[in-house]
Length: 212
Image (cartoon, rainbow, N blue to C red; front, side, top):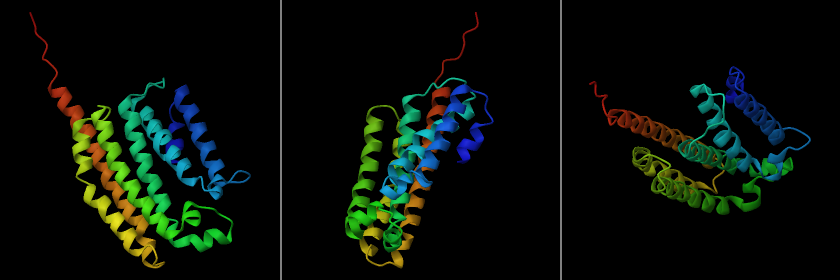
């Protein structure tokens, strides 16, 4: 929603249109009559809202462009940001399965149970780093971002280990989402630092003008 608020500052048609789309998206996710998160669709909607939509909105805001011109690097970065954000939401359901059932909210954890959810977290973290290397090989992410993000692998492993060890403990598993918040923060910072480093390196490699 912060992205939507910032986007209204810009006069570009593309940004305003994206602002309306993001606002409508969040309303449909939580509010009647749709309440799509109650159908177990919170994670994919969260991915879209806080990944491609928000990342693109901030990109357009910072660039000041009036047109929706987006590179593969922006799309790749937004996918990774949305992915880790959705993982936070997924893990936030571990300790509230009974409460979700009581109000008729069919979150993924209600459907899978804690053991199944722990397996999903393990696969999801592995898929995150696999996706990182695939995007790097496809050259849609700079090498510096791939290397720096790869260094956060121990943080991802710690989140997986915590969930696997404590998914049956309703008191301890509450902290699972904070492990994912830490992963999201560290991974995102590494991604951003890599993008900045790649841009600075590219500028240094530009040939100097020859004055005749």
